[in-house]
Image (cartoon, rainbow over all chains, first blue to last red; front, side):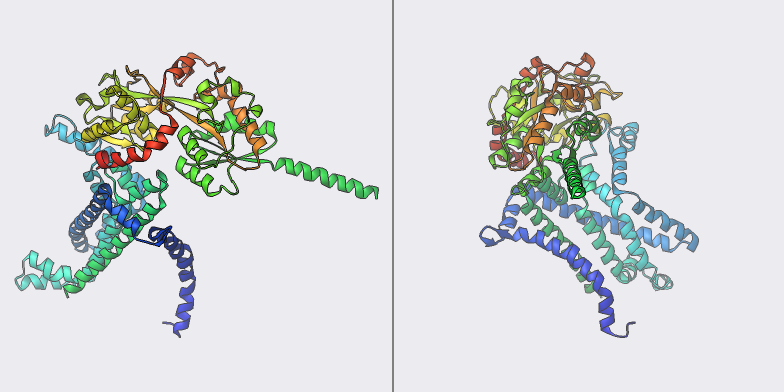
Length: 273
Length: 339
């Protein structure tokens, strides 16, 4: 495309400088605090962090919810993406518009909607009490379930878009061919669809998992202080305790988790070749 | 020559005038009710001081960090903050003692507000009572212990330990259990036992008001400064008067060490503490007065922490006790309550 590698590098230089000065450098300085003490470089911040039972629970809860949200988004996303690819071009465009519509609405507004839905006087509880399933409204807000639903709704479009893009590249006669050759739908999915869409799954999975790990608004509003996650704990350490070392440790853990998830998904995708 | 002297004189006059216009006082304050403060306090003061006020807002931790980070060359001249945070800054040698000779309104303050952290390092400008807001149609509150009673299970919210209301609630629950002092170990354990019965541990009074107006919560401890949020609700809320009494706290004014703007800072503080301004601020329902000469109508008083009898009856947690114990409270809270 370029007449020389030098031209390509020159064009990439402004973006590289921007990323280096305004992202990598400040984040690097901040994160390095997590490895420093009065005596020099140390892992004390990490040892202290993981020695506290609360931090261990928050770490495991964040990991659990991240995996659950990404996994559920993948299951629902595959079904949604598969049905969308089978629509007529006109209907596909319309449905795709509906899928990306939530991304145009503020996460704050979308999360507050869940308060209305999951509240004691919300639609869910009205239905439960109305159907006689419970005499009194059940507690849904400020639970892990509420945070899970909020995060799933928040990031589901990213998974559907990623899978849709991958699925549209599958040759149209491949699935009918597999069916004609005697494969059931379970085999079609695992032997045909999944291998051909693994790149979309890696992208979608990384986006959803990373998003669920790092989202602040949704866990803060729907979970509050009873369902602390790493990002709400990070905010608490900075804004309540002025403890930048713990905050840097948490930030580093989040970054490591995100990269690990991406590498793991890529490894799984590669292993299926 | 004559023209040159005239020109020089004119330049000096303009320079002096410009200097006077550029006199600036930077204050650090809480971010709530800033429009109301502007009308009742900032604009009237700027009109008489021939100076500019620069208002910096934020939460306590952010503002304290800024004061500490700029200790060598202060960027904040004076600040309003909780008494325990003021004591913490004072112990780090970041504050300058106030010159009472420049605060003619100091003697008008309630005794508790005159020297709340010792050494004249701060002066109280507002009190707040803390009690329990509850739904009169659903529950009756007679004691702080009712918060952990089975009748409120699943319908009560408590303030988070990290806010100003958290330690006050612990103190009153401790009193209700028949204990005195600042050993809250058994109270925190008790809250931990009931943690599943508590809807959430709120951080801001606005958050609680939303929860109570959405009927998620029917009773919770809160500062009186937030009462107007509940009073205007269509739901029947009441302010409890528990048998153990009400807790209380105070916000104070402080001046940073070596800010070079001490005279103007004292002038502003004295103006804020005056009967005129304290009355105006009270009538706007922004802050309860610390000036004992302030007189307001019964209707206004009903929204405030007002009057010597009420102020003297408040159970106030010593700022020194809070600073000494806070870390241990938070540690136990995180282990047994948040889990």
